[in-house]
Length: 434
Image (cartoon, rainbow, N blue to C red):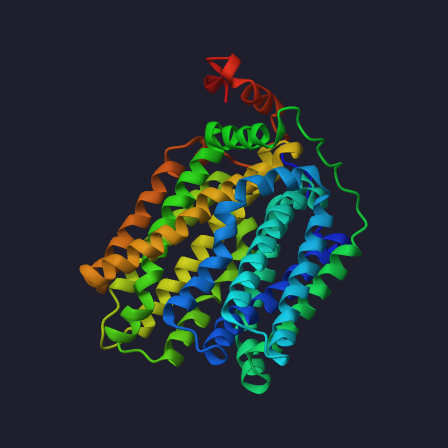
């Protein structure tokens, strides 16, 4: 029997407040992506190493705090975590022009702000992914994630253009004030959400270490989550190798200008809102699991178009490659986010999302380092080919897992899995049950 059609989330005031907060925050974040390194370059005359270190500082919290963040998010009201993260990020970003105005802005301060905003980004990300089921219900997860991807893509398209104009007109530090204001606006929208959320989880008797271990066991022993973590982690590892050398390849081998490269990236993101609209329909037509597999296949199949781009006319090939790549990534992301939110008991959502983030984002710095090292030894083209070829390995865990047979969102999570895993040391055959 088919399920009754749920009302559109466009008609849900509370969901629309979350959607609007995401869109506003994403625009501001894109301003920071440009303004933070430009502040280091233009004001502090940072070296290439210092600029790279600045970017690394924003990702280090995902490795250092990734697993504890899940425990803390499960113990607190998730909407409150999101609001606090927004307001603290606003204060940190507003401190940059203030420090610059009194001549106190230096590289250590900028690195500290980058690390702190990265940590708050982590907490917001884990909390929002864990909070969404409270607003959409299980039946609305696919639609909710798809619409949020549309909001994020809108910010990614509009943000760089707005940021570039603000930086040129006002300077990088003052442009940070726009980002700070966007986080305040996001916090206000989240504060106005009225739908109650699940109660926070009381601390476990075994302390934080035991709760972190429970979250890790749940992800690594649950076949559906383990396959997603493996596929996404492999794809991210090799795609970060690709990203580490692509700009050099585009400028030195394909002889593209900075403006042309920006146009390629901007045009390539136009498929993101299309995937956000079509994703739920594709999932409903072919099934949730097959749509996840299809997204992975499209992403991997699109990447060779980049390396095949001829020097004589590379732009059409690059645009086609990035359009397909982004479409596939969003189709995959909508399905796998919805599935993992649906199968995880509410009390475990924070730890599950944090563990997934720890695994699939933790490989990014490693991939960048390996890509940079290979690019300097074997050359840009071969490194690009290794990155593209390696992403194909990411298909294997998903295609060979039970995910491919799932037709729709499960009716309910399976809390018995958590109980079994929590006591796995007392039950030698527990792994067979999950």
